[in-house]
Figure 1 (cartoon, helix red, strand yellow):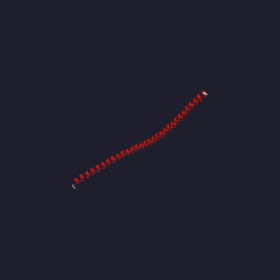
Figure 2 (figure 1 turned 60 degrees about the vertical axis):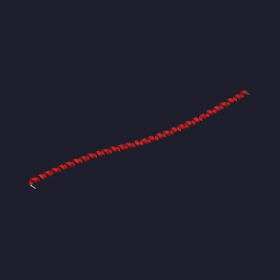
Figure 3 (figure 1 turned 135 degrees about the horizontal axis):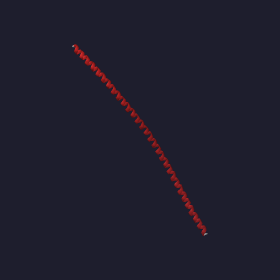
Figure 4 (figure 1 turned 90 degrees about the vertical axis):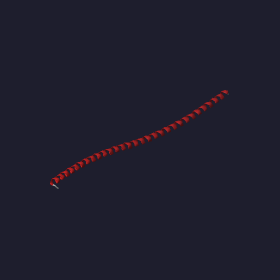
Length: 111
């Protein structure tokens, strides 16, 4: 019977080791599942942040384009205003010249 007892003891040890190994495997599988869930969560956060950055970048590009358009319009308005001032100066010079001629004629006529 000592062999049977020894055999039973060995079987109990092996069963306990198998049970512990199975428990460790379950714990490891649960840790792996949690890790995978964390990775999925982080990937989703990264995707959302990348989308937010993409949207903000697009808004920034649109704002920059609008600013360029406004600057171009401002240059055009400035050029138009300069041209109008030049035209006004030409007209003013013509009026002054006409006034001098009228004054000269008036003076010659003794008026």
